[in-house]
Amino acid sequence: MRIIETPIPLKELNEIRERSGAKVSLTLLGRTERNGIPLNRVLIRGDQKEIKRFMEFLMRSRAGG
Image (cartoon, rainbow, N blue to C red; front, side, top):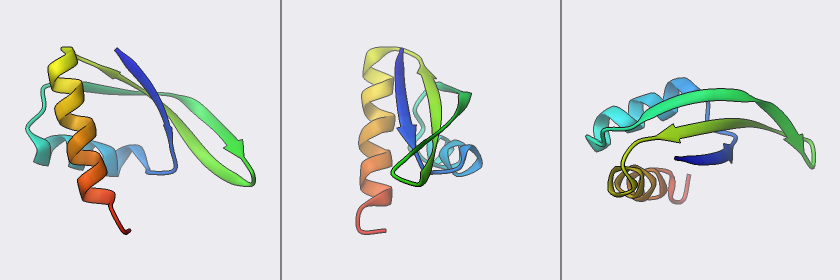
């Protein structure tokens, strides 16, 4: 289990999850704001290996964008 804070909308995170093939579930815990930027607090559930797979895919898919 891991919690991340990200400006990426949950819908887009789910699309990234599907493309990654990682067997994880995403749950929106709430929204916060840091330095004027709205952030989604998202709980990622799954096997540690699958979470790592998803996070690596997420970083690659959002690199430079």
